[in-house]
Amino acid sequence: MSRRIAAFIRHADYQQLANTPSALQPFALNQDGIEQAQLCAVQLKKVINQNNWHLDSAIDSSSLLRAWQTANIVSELYDDLFDEPPHITCFEALAERSVGSAANLTTKQIEQIIEDDPRFDSLPKKWKSDSNFKLPFMGAESLLGAGERVAQHLIKQMSALAESSDTQVKLFFGHGAAFRHAAYKLGILEFDEIAQLSMYHASPIYLEYLPNGEWQHIAGVWKVRSQHSEYTD
Image 1 (tube, rainbow, N blue to C red):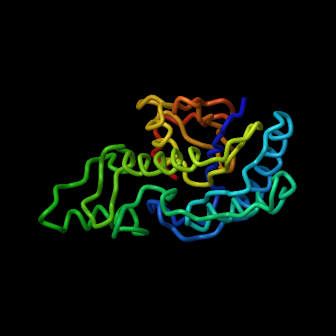
Image 2: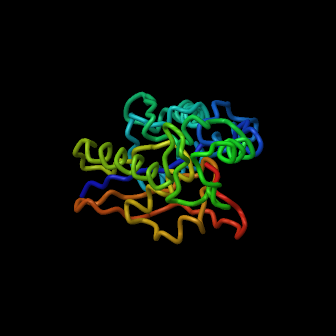
């Protein structure tokens, strides 16, 4: 019986601005990130060959450079894994939670803007990691909102995979918090687990899309988050 598997792959490490919500930062991978992406390709090849799975040639990536660059390194290193030459399509639907018009401002700057605006109450202490909280800026969304957006993209793309007698694996390159919240929306994680878990850079989590529309986690390891850390992508 054919199986459809989605591989969640968080982008590799990149040149991130300090103390700045990382959602829409436009920067490239750093050297550690390049090496992580190369190792991801090796790990992916091992799992694919061990299980006799087949990789779908259409790769989905977030539109942000760090995700696309991770996808590009993986696809170029092992293009022989694909039945056809791989190609990457970028989707804003796979981006991390947007902070809207506050994009790429520091946490301190965002909090000061809120304090200076008489229309708004002070931000809650852990606003960055509150799954339900949305900044009062144009274009901002909550973490759960981002997770719903990613989940709907996954359902649409996995539903559209062609029928095959082989197990088909489709690669999705994106961001940790949005993927975890999508996993909650898909019934993979409990709500409390969103805060307890993270994702390793460039290390796939494999989720099977079942014929009845449900999902199950079949391979890959979630990263256990330290008690005092906050979400990053």
